[in-house]
Image (tube, rainbow, N blue to C red; front, side, top):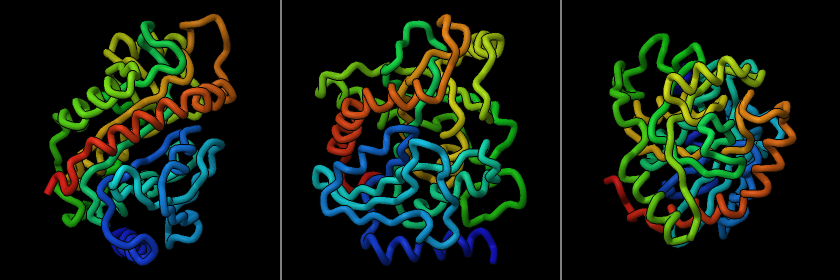
Length: 278
């Protein structure tokens, strides 16, 4: 069975459970899974119950798909993702996004927990991703080309939709929440970065660093989805503060800001024009 066949089988199974194509899909990063509880009339499907869907085996990732309604919008939430550092190939890391594209979803919000490189940031800052740098050492479009996914050489000039970033700014202002902007740099992990690496990343123009999102964004753009990226700065990157980095700090900060992060996501969903893009 080809990857396309596996994607199609998974999409068929999801459609049978959730019904019509949602207006927007949201991928929730580490510690941000509580947002799924905001959906009304929720239909939750554990990843293990969807054919071929890879597991989400990292703390802070629930590993389930939740469909429901929010502010009169049909929303599909992926509570958890797979990561390259878990040993998954990029076909598995981007499996969920390919399923979303097969479902016909056109708007995708990618969220993550990230380390702050920009010294203006503090733990708890929410950053809209304006652009990214891929230092994961791999690209999800490498290998044999499947024309049904999209172009072989898709343009990445505007990975993160200007329209959606402006919508996020308006939503943040209306909700009374500060929203930063910056460049996200993706590395493979799972070890945290060294202070020397962080200094190098700052020289490259990065404001935040993480271990996800970029492969999903690349695949989504190849498929023609409109993408918004949001990072929750859960800790300052190595060497900025005189303290070691820990997964516990990431989870604690994500939990502390999850309500504000959820308020912003909800305001963004509310601001989407139904049926856009056509």
